[in-house]
Structures are given as C-alpha cells and as structure tokens.
Image 1 (cartoon, rainbow, N blue to C red):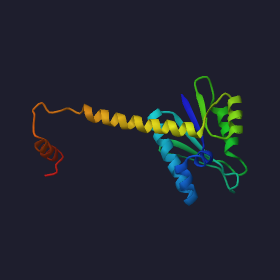
Image 2 (cartoon, rainbow, N blue to C red; image 1 turned 180 degrees about the vertical axis):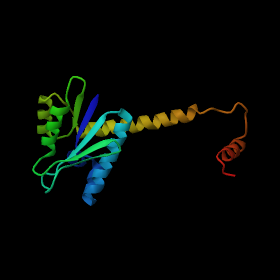
Image 3 (cartoon, rainbow, N blue to C red; image 1 turned 120 degrees about the vertical axis):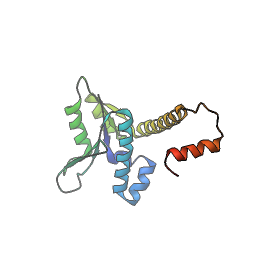
Image 4 (cartoon, one colour; image 1 turned 90 degrees about the vertical axis):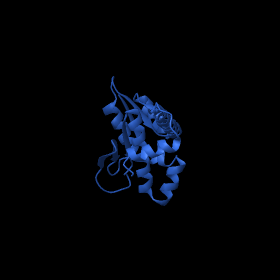
Length: 169
C-alpha cells in the first residue's frame, strides 16, 4: 500500500492556481487542494493525508475525511512538518511505502532519514496533469468502444432514436 502525506500549505504556496486562490480566500485554496488530491486518490487508489499547520492558531487539532482524503489540522504549537514526521514513524512498514509531497528542503532531508520518499510540489503537479490526461484518454476510448449500430442509418435518424431512447419525446 502507498500513502501520500501532503504538506498542505507548502503545496498551496507552490502551485500557481492555489496561490491565486490563497490570496483571495485561504479556505478556497484548501478546498481546491482537497478536491485535487481526491482525484489523485480516486485514480491511484493510494491513501492520501493532507496536513495543514495550525501552530499559529489556538485550539485543538482536528481531523476529518472529505472525498476519501484525510485532512488533519495540527494542534497548537505543532507544525505540519512535526505531524508528518510522526505519521511517517507510525505508518511506514514493510508493506507500506510512504511518500511526502513537499518542496521544503529541510523536511525532505528528514523524511529520507525516516525511510519515506519525497515528491516535490512540482512533481505532484505533473503527476496530477498526467492523471487528468489519462482520464481524458480513457473517456475518449470508452466512448469509441460504445456499440455501433449494425444498420447504416443517417446521422439525423440516429439522433432521433437516441432522443427516443432517453425519453426526450
């Protein structure tokens, strides 16, 4: 099993689309990151955990699941890096490979030392773009595999039959 730990604010600060959202509304940037990671999770089947810093926010930590993506806000005085390092120790084993998405060089060095692999923000963005292309390709391929009629009919007649089939009359 593969697990992808995502340093939420680090990725938001790196991806142009998310930076623009962050400058308008941080909540929208977080929500968009969660949506993108949900697409990643659905395609790859990997477990995805996004960690957001709350070290400057008073209060208790919180955890929830959205679109099968686990979202963690750290507790007061705990950084995302601290939580990610703890999760690596907890989750890494012989059957589980842990990847950490961050462009924080110091964090990358630490995670290597714990046996996790790193994925830079840029690499993760490229992987998401590849996934989107693959999904588009699969949709086109599936559309082309749809059964064709054995009777040669005019396109207009086929469109009328399709409307009838869908109950649009």
